[in-house]
Length: 233
Image 1 (cartoon, rainbow, N blue to C red):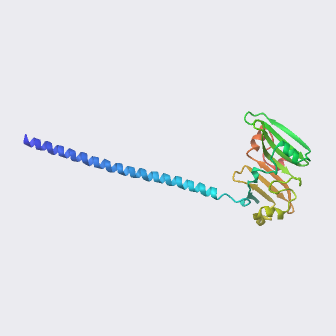
Image 2 (cartoon, helix red, strand yellow; image 1 turned 90 degrees about the horizontal axis):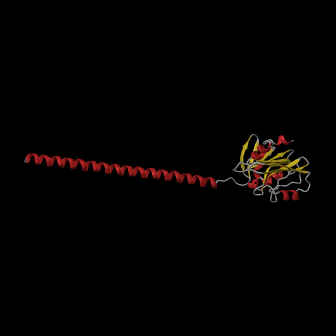
Image 3 (cartoon, rainbow, N blue to C red; image 1 turned 120 degrees about the vertical axis):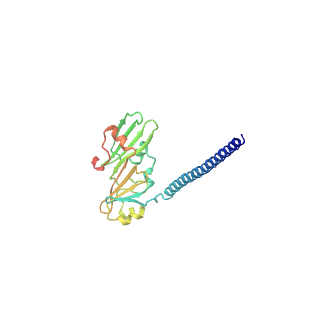
C-alpha cells in the first residue's frame, strides 16, 4: 500500500509539473502573440501616418498659379484656377446679354432627362459662340464650351483675342520659354476644363474652352458633337 501511495504521489507530482509547464508555454505564447499584435498595430499606424504625411505633402505641393503643369504633343499646359470662374461677371443668361450686347442670335435646346433637366443655350456673335447649360431645378448655370474670335470678349485673367505674345508672357511668365509654340492651354488639378489660346504671328487669334464635366451629358442628350473645335466650323 505504501509503495502505491508513493507512486500515486509521484504521478500526481509529475502531472502537476507537466500542467505548470504547459501553463508556462501558453503564457509565453500569449506574450509573443501580444507583441506581434502590437507590432502589427504599430505597422498599421505607421502606414496611416505615412499616408497622411503623403496627403499633406500633396496638398502642400499644389502647383503655383501660372506655373507649367505639363507639356504634351507640342502643347504647353499652365496651372490656372481661373477655370472655375472664367468671366468678369456672374455667368447667367441675363449677364451674358448685358455684357455682350452685340449678340447676333440665341438658340436653346431643351434636355428632358429626369435628373438632368435643363437647357443648352448657345449665344452666337459673328463666327464666335458661347454655350451655357441651364439646370432647371436649381436655376444654376455652367459654361459648357466656347470658341471666341472676337476681340471684344475679355476673360477674367485678361486673356482675349488680339493679345500679344509679350502680354501673354506677363500673365504667365513661364511661357517665355515656349515662344515657339503656338498652342498654349490652361487647366487645373481636376482636368475637367481646358482653355486653349491659339497664336498666329505671336498674337492670340482664337480662344477655345470646353468643360468635360458638363459637356458629355449635355451633348449626348441632344446628339451634339463631342469635343473638338473643328466640329463647329
